[in-house]
Length: 197
Image (cartoon, rainbow, N blue to C red; front, side, top):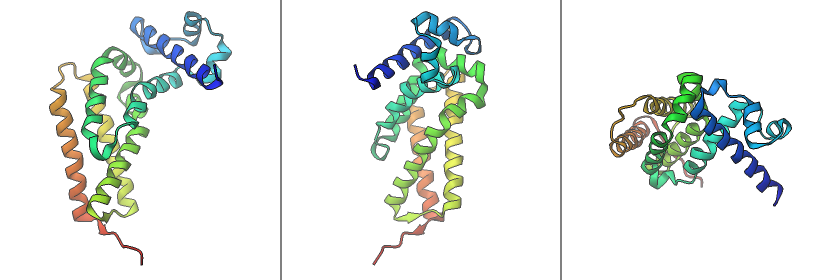
């Protein structure tokens, strides 16, 4: 096996051990010692791959959700990406609520903010291309922050809300709201793109 394959196997093994541990106890009570004991790795192996338990948790979420989310073409299937995230939340309810109980709303939101920032930036690029207009940098930065925070907040509410609404309806509402509001912003605030001569 190549070094990359061994490293990925090690990370996935530790990730699975973390998920099993979260079924038994709160996240903040899980230790590196119990994880490495379960999978029969040494402490050095754990710290070669992860800085701490939080780093392992972040990698687990990235591996489970964000890697797949990045494979969606947001130009054509933003709603599909939203639907995927909502289904993941439903299927991993216990793990995410364990994280929410340990890290709180803000902690869970922080785990997703970077990826949502990339998603919003991509959606803005698509909206700019479709409209032939651009948003000035300061306002663009504000919009990215506004939408990333809104998306992360909605995700946390989806985790907390045990009596969730219909996934298909929510995905449609969210997709329509983001796309239509960005189009409106570009029409009202964007400046026409200048073509080079």
